[in-house]
Image 1 (spheres, rainbow, N blue to C red):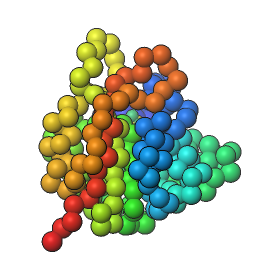
Image 2 (image 1 turned 45 degrees about the vertical axis):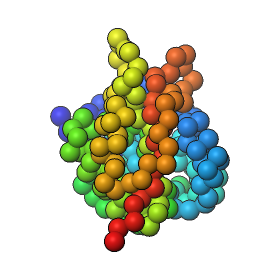
Image 3 (image 1 turned 135 degrees about the vertical axis):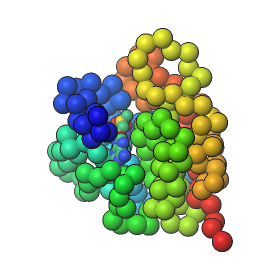
Length: 201
Ligand SMILES: C[S@@+](CC[C@H](N)C(=O)[O-])C[C@H]1O[C@@H](n2cnc3c(N)ncnc32)[C@H](O)[C@@H]1O
């Protein structure tokens, strides 16, 4: 099954445990603490748009992209209800260049981690770098393999999985053990990784 069909099925049936209905505190803390200043942002795999909308409400110019048409429609609806200007585009990030490059900041929550092959994760990291301006930042929120889990949950990656994929293109500024922002009890553990695009000579 293609990723478009896989995610369409999940959004259609409501099997979307990642969809917290609110922006993730990992994004909010990272933006405020560093601070990351107003710039053009790309939210890759934006889902139903809560993180994009928070960024737009905080003076960022935001494009959200997703492969799921259902997610993109919901994101547009939410932005309109919140009276926020945000562009949402139905596109496969691994196959297309997004209009609006270069971005100052790229965010993804649960998109990079969804690729199970090392090659795809590296390709994703390279593509993020291609869309960023010189010294631009990427924040990714990734399922953490240090969680001992019996039941279902997000894909889990080790710190080494992240480093291996991003190292050629990014300098890691911080890699913290965290958990996903969620309104459910015991949210899954996560990595919060902030990176800066390497200078290419
Ligand atoms: C775990 S969900 C997270 C959604 C959203 N970031 C959130 O936090 O609610 C992963 C999202 O990535 C999207 N996605 C997966 N592969 C993608 C790709 N190649 N290009 C764009 N979006 C993709 C899926 O459709 C899905 O909405």
